[in-house]
Image (cartoon, rainbow, N blue to C red; front, side, top):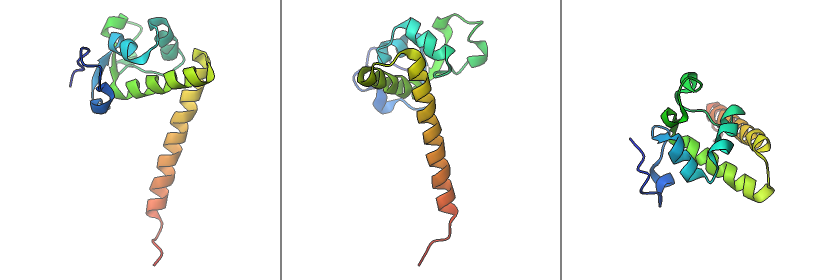
Length: 117
């Protein structure tokens, strides 16, 4: 599934982890400058799907999952609310991802508990 940059109105509604988003599209959707996106990538807050080739490829060939759109929109809200720089955003995003993973693990463990009558 390829992203249509001309239809930005409801892009997040249909993007999923299997959607492909280019670097330019991600910048357009995120409210971040290309240099800020580069910093978030350098800090590890964002990762192109072709991560192993990132340094070998020009940014025009980088491909991101649709989930990265949610990540950069979350980062934009955090930046607007708390006036965070990109290094602080990367740290906050890492903590939010860790919380998400831990909540999923807790849910899986609760599902294994015997149900009380």
